[in-house]
Amino acid sequence: MDLSRAALCYAQAEYPKLNTDAYLNRLADMAEELRDRLPPTPYPLKIIQGINRYLFEELGFHGNAEDYYDPRNSYLNEVLERRTGIPITLAVVYLELARRLSFGMVGVALPGHFLVRPNFAGAEIFVDPFHSGEILFEQDCQLRLSQIFGQGVHLEPQWLVPASKRQILARLLTNLKYIYLNRQQFAKTLSLVELILQIFPDQPQERRDRGLLLYHLERWAQAAQDLEFYLTRSPDARDRGAIFEILRKIQS
Image (cartoon, rainbow, N blue to C red; front, side):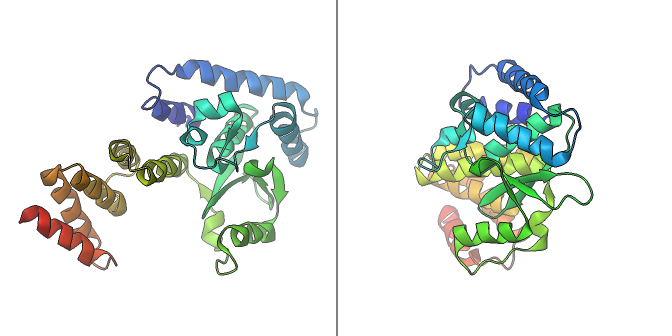
């Protein structure tokens, strides 16, 4: 799967006239410019430093902490145009440049944050694209979590496992889903849940969320199907009573 192409294809839902090839060509051009700036000996740390200089110092890409929940931060075309984004979209740019340089890197999906790291044995460093490519060690990842959530969250080993491309795309869409949900733009939120379900069909929480959105949009029969599915698949869910009550209202 081409991660950048997939992200741009999803962006077409918001930007119907988006020319995906134009942005893919821009990434390819960036990679070629970057290749000329890298040292001839491919030491991993030197390559990472070279990517950081090019992407963050020369081109000025940066994390958008001031307007973090602007939807444009989650659309790859806008990130490439505006040179700002959130952790996961800046990570996609970083990963796609590295891929075009044949330098293996993977995404690391921490709760509330997203990093990248070299994908080879013995690589114990992480890179934070949201903070200008800051190089981190495992203990620094714990510090990042503490900065976001406070001292009560402790780094779990499974959080450092490489994220698949499908997981990266689903997380990108999930960010947008909650942005539009908080704005009560239910039709847009529903379209994003549909896209997530294309990646992970029959995921119980997404089926529940789709059911609740359909309920708000007064599409009763479809809502009931999804909520019944959720109750069947999640018999011990904490919200089981609330979902059952909504289902009872639909069927009454």
